[in-house]
Length: 300
Image (cartoon, rainbow, N blue to C red):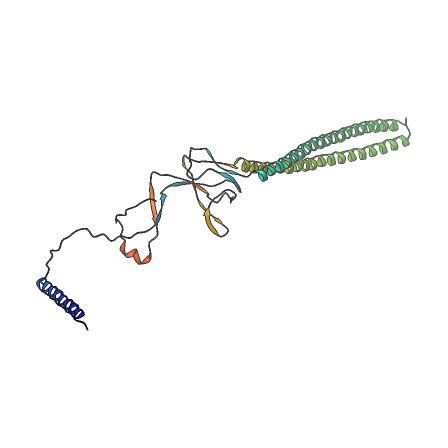
């Protein structure tokens, strides 16, 4: 090894020894105990969660009939009460209205015909009864005349003015006329019974036709209401928000083209005067929460 390299190693060794000595001296001088006075103060253990701000009270909007949404106001639109906010497709609804209108018109025509038939049949029955009653009165008058003739014939036979044969003929005439009165009486009874039964039958036909009209009227009003309800209006003033609905087994926000029904709220107008934050807390963190604790809320 050359003298020059030997000199360099000696210098490095001296520097190392000097550095180690300085470190040991510094450590020994600062090895005394450090005393710190305890202080009280707030200790914050934060629990961060993501949640959603909801209105405590809100008005759900539900269509009054089934249909496919043709249009919706934009979410977040501020509307006034009775302002249109959603529209259903009306093609099928209009066809239903036309169909039930035709059915109602036909039912009303059947009712008019049934009432006309009832009036005509009742009038015919009244005439038949009047005719039978007149026939009975005629036969009764004829019987009275025949009996009077028989009495006169008896007197003539007793006075030997008329032959016995005339008396027998008069008696036969009375018997024949009594039979005519009986037949006329039966005919009147039959006419009266027929009038009563026909009246009941015509009344039943008219009632059936009237019930058919009422049924078709109810159906027509129902489909007409469905058409009128195709325009959905805001029940109150406020901001319109879309609700989550079921679509193919999963929940998504309502959109144009979705099918909605009278049991399914699809929009809401929240009351923004009172809000609440809804969040989920893991089971492991529940023990860190107590009722009445302060929560700091930051909105996105």
